[in-house]
Length: 319
Ligand code: BDR
Ligand code: CA
Image (tube, rainbow, N blue to C red):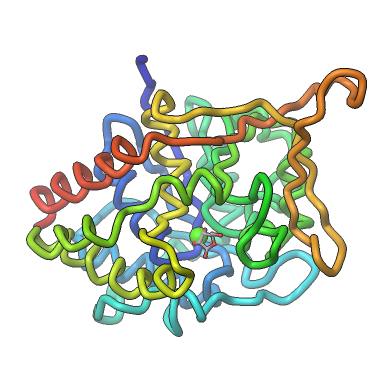
């Protein structure tokens, strides 16, 4: 299968798995031309997650990819950060100096507007955090929808959830903006928790990173800290959720998918942020005119190999 090179904006809240996902994208310039990184409050406060991107770029020596900070709270409520998963900094584990590089100074949605307007081809958006920036960008500049190729996001669950029994963290955090995005009419690729869980890196595999260069050792420190949360859950692997949409865009053949109607539950005590995936067929449901591509399964070995290859590439490039 020939996969074209895409122009992408990665919207994120690093977050251990966001950081790893960005590294995979950086290691694959044949698939991704990264026009910019935008940040949103989620795993930690906006200032912390933004600082984490800058720190990581300084450490790796990444130059020329603009970073722009976006919204510091979801549309209708204050952010509820996930320090219990990602630590006080949002990326605890690796010890990195304060960043020297700075952001563009533009708000994330202004950066998106300017970049997408100026781009000579359609842009793919890759949201890896709550959908506040993306939802409000679409609401503010609806005429730019025609310049968006698709939105490939980590978020939602098919059956269960993680932050709630029936809701995944990113969608739970800002269900109102998630609804704007899911109802936008744009092609949506949704990487739900179930598929991400399948793609985890086994604890035994993570040990290999220690033997690598500077980038692999940075990844090891990320995995080591974040893996403690995974172990507490009784898992046998480190689930790098946010890598999933990135790898799908590179290698869709590794995945099984289903075309499904997906509605966002914006209210409710138990189900706020639930992504209601409609498996009904036949007489029970009207033809869905706007199905989402939901990733249902992944070939784990091939999936994690993409990460191992990425770390090797980055060790050689930046090590
Ligand atoms: C999502 O929530 C965050 O903790 C992760 O970075 C990921 O984007 C998983 O539910
Ligand atoms: Ca994230």
